[in-house]
Image (cartoon, rainbow, N blue to C red; front, side, top):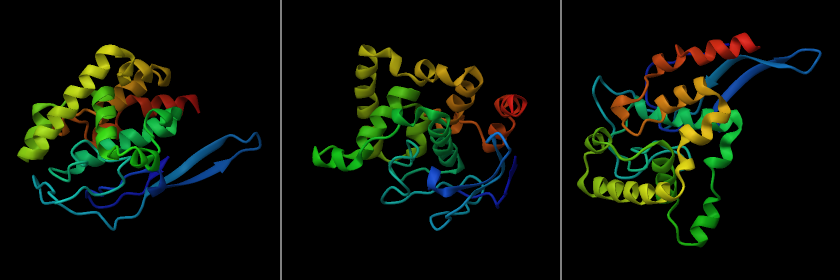
Length: 208
């Protein structure tokens, strides 16, 4: 599969609806993806080296934002990597673990961002020093620590909520790749170059 490349930037809106694929099907109905393209760059920014994006509000779709993206603070290309990790979980058939009915949450006066943060801290690990330092906002850091602590309590009652547990159905290579993309610490996440070089992609090509 080939990927249509674009200049390095942070899109802040990586989600399934913004990924287009070219595919072909053989006589048996087996589909092969030939090309993939990331589209919809109206929220994108091209940061100088070491520059982070700080906004007074979160950008992008609430269901697919990174942990720092839910705050609107400290966003970098690592934020897109996290979102792509969520897209991979969705594409591999485990989207039910990610998606909530936002309208239903609103009816019950539950902020969607808070619910999603709680879920992601439960799945991928607690708030780390790297995450808090990158967000760098005292109010948001306090909120992240609180949500992370609440997620820890949920996890104690249900340790199977960790992605490394329920993600095993995807296979060990997929778990390793996605865990690297969804690391709560943006400074410790895989880069997109490391993602594309991961052995999981070769495994998938061999199976095809």
